[in-house]
Image (cartoon, rainbow, N blue to C red):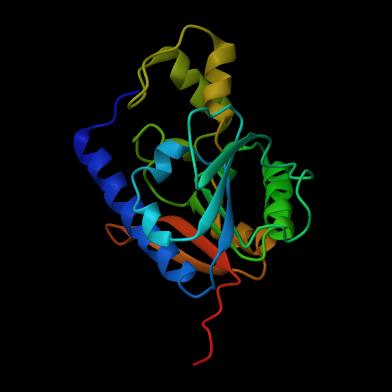
Amino acid sequence: MHKPKFILHLEEKVRKDRHLLFVELLSRIGKPFTILDVGGSYDYWRKTDYEALGNVRIVLLNLFQQDGIGPPFSAEVGDARDLSRYSSQEFDVVFSNSVIGHVGGFSDQMRMAREIRRVGKRYFVQTPNHGFLIDWRTLVPCFHFLPVPLQAWCFCHFSVGTYGKVADRATSLEMASRIRNIRRRELRLLFPESTVVPERYLGMTKSFMIHSGFTIPES
């Protein structure tokens, strides 16, 4: 999958703006603090000015092993839907960027959301908006609105946006069903106490930033 350069530049700008909001929220809490990044990787953080956060500890949880990283990072292998290794409110902040759409159906997303809310005193979650007209996976307008079987049929018979034609139906079904983007009304079920901040592109809501617990300190 090869995205056009202007799309990569747009994604980078959006990520930077998102990180600025996250850093502003972090400035409201005292240090030191711990961050659990659910679905996190060092590749994401190395593009940020994480050293400016100061005295923090960041735990990267992902499905794959991450070696060769040092403080303030540590890495663990695990499932976003099951954080039972961690106690309730063990982390000052739970962070997750574009992960909840990849864990399965809505029941799986509910499990992940419950775990985030349990282990974190605060959280910051980003997820694409299902209602955005562009399918951010293929870059084809409205493709994600098609039923999964029809998406799979298209993957089998055509090159779809940034994806080449695939050879077998099993692979096409996996590609069509691997992502479930979230509707705004579902956010209230997943994160009922949260503040929802839209990320906009061309006047449309491309994705959502959801956060809770970052109260402004009294002066």
